[in-house]
Amino acid sequence: MTTLHFIDPRTDGWRPAPDEPVPHPAPGLLLRHDQWRALRTRWPAEVPVGVVWPNDIDIAELAPDLHRLDLIALQFPRWTDGRAYSQARLLRGRWRWRGQLRAVGDVIADMAPLLWRCGFDGAQLRAGESVAVAQRALRAFDGHYQPDVRTAPTATETPHG
Image: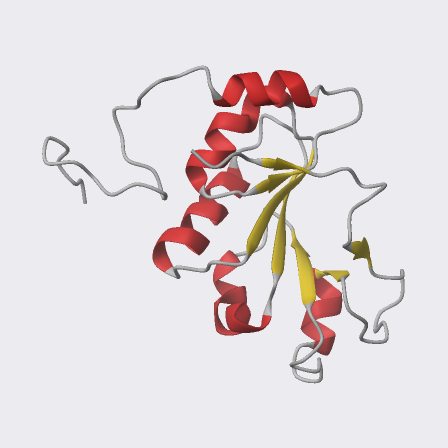
């Protein structure tokens, strides 16, 4: 099993875009959703870009732009608010997006297994959370009853729909 990558913001190659409505395109910028809306038609194809997407805005709005995005950071405003899990499942399942998918915000170590199963490949834990505890949480269960976005259903699993 490939593991979830835990992001250290001090060494991360991606950085938040300047707090201005229309920042100048530069590699490794993480744009807010409103900045991406303003720049999407003018962003140079050769410049890698990421977007931080709130969990209360329909992720389908990003679907036409997925081929242009290198990173999508989905926000967890509170660890008890699971809407970003659903957004991740849609990105990975419905649209088969294969770029970097990162959990940001109020992300705690206990969330690691579900983040992984929903398609996240990176997480930035909130201050004070332990990466070691999150890595142990990823190994806590040997199997699951339901398939996830990373595995195909087995012959004994019946698709619901």
